[in-house]
Amino acid sequence: MGVAADSETPPVLVASNRGPVSYTLAEDGTLTARRGGGGMVSGLSALGDAAGTWVCAALGPGDREAVSRAGGATLDPADTGGRPVRMLDIPPDIFDAAYNGIANSVLWFVHHLLYQTPLEPVYDAEFERQWAGYTTYNTAFADALAAEAAPGAEVLVQDYHLSLVPALLRERRPDLRIGHFSHTPWAPPDLYRVLPDAIARQVLLGILGADRAAFLTRRWAGAFADCCAELLGAEVREAAPGGPDAFTVTYEGRTTRLGVHGLGADGAFLRERAHRPDVDERLAALREQVGERATIVRVDRTELSKNIVRGLLAYRRLLTERPEWRGRVVHVAFAYPSRQDLAVYRDYTAEVSRVAEGINAEFGQDGWTPVVLHVKDDFARSLAAYRMADVALVNPIRDGMNLVAKEIPLISERGCALVLSREAGAAAELGDDALLVNPYDIAGTAEALHRALTMDADERRSRAGRLAKAATALTPRDWFLTQVEALRTT
Image (spheres, rainbow, N blue to C red):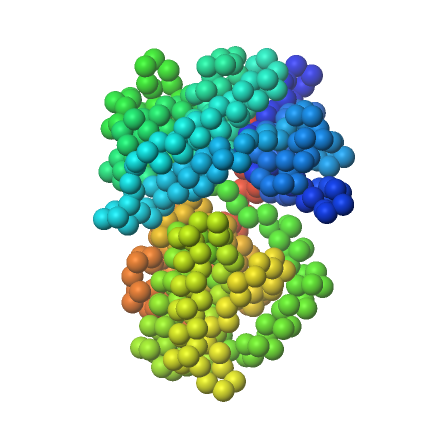
């Protein structure tokens, strides 16, 4: 798939919190650049001369030093693969308020249904201070994009960190075509109303500043449309079947199109990377540890929405109610610490370890450790676990997509059964061949694990083949390019 471009086409800009390059600052003052990958990187590369500036935030001391040395202009092209990248050195207190205070502790919690409502949220003076920081942070991005964009350019704004940018940018540059993509779920109206009324409206109006807003599934697009209808009184219409859009939202005479782009796994990269020597080495070590036993594999960050603790409790229920599995199965659980600057995430990470250790203490025998838990991030070891998986457990409370659900069936050597939460966005594409579970239901998840473990080998391989095909239906590169193409038809 390609997007036509000619000498008259303005470059396409991208805005995201995290950029395509990060820097490490050594004690002697040396800066080392590390380039990232992913769909936006490959998509922008595919645009060639039509790839414009990527605007992102400085995330650490190395990034801030790189911005300083660049004099606030675009970074050294030698560090970015020749791609123009403008990194914003937003004051640390503003960044913390926007990123930790609002994006990750309010908007993330609302869309993933994570609040314990008898105790939280509390929208007090501290929240108001953080919201002011979030607004300042979004304004900095809008100002930078307005300065960087050529007349009539397309701008793709990414995710909940930058939900106010489309409207702010439209005020500054009404000539631009603006898209916004939400990588998270979207809360239905009754739950979205947890936000203060004025803030809830401001977020919706921020995204409606885009010509086109896109989501990972039709369900999330529909939830956003419902919020616009109920909280703003906007007119919502379903788009014509077969077109690039799912809905249109019209408010105060202006229409925003809503699209759906289900992000797929990068099959070619994963298959090649999963058979490099470092992965073979880790696979041998895991197999020595596990032996010939069946494996239930999960790979997640210790993010609250991933539901790791309930997954462990379901495994414990399996061993309790199905004693025939004792000594015959190992739960290979990789739970990599996430957002450890927030106390609730530190506590959750500790709880994951506590529950895993409790299962091992209760059921472990000489020569059999029921749970093999790793908490140090290691991509090669994750791929090794993918290869040896008989069952993949992916049971988030709620998830925008969840690429792990797509990656494990793609890499598993014997073909794995997938136990998948019905609340993961991936369920819309994989549900026919996965074993769907209610993520809150411990007994139901334990029973699904038993069904997966006892599934006929031929059926398991057949299901895994269909899962792998669905998982790679839209590559990350094509996922990006289809958004550009759809925005250009606005």
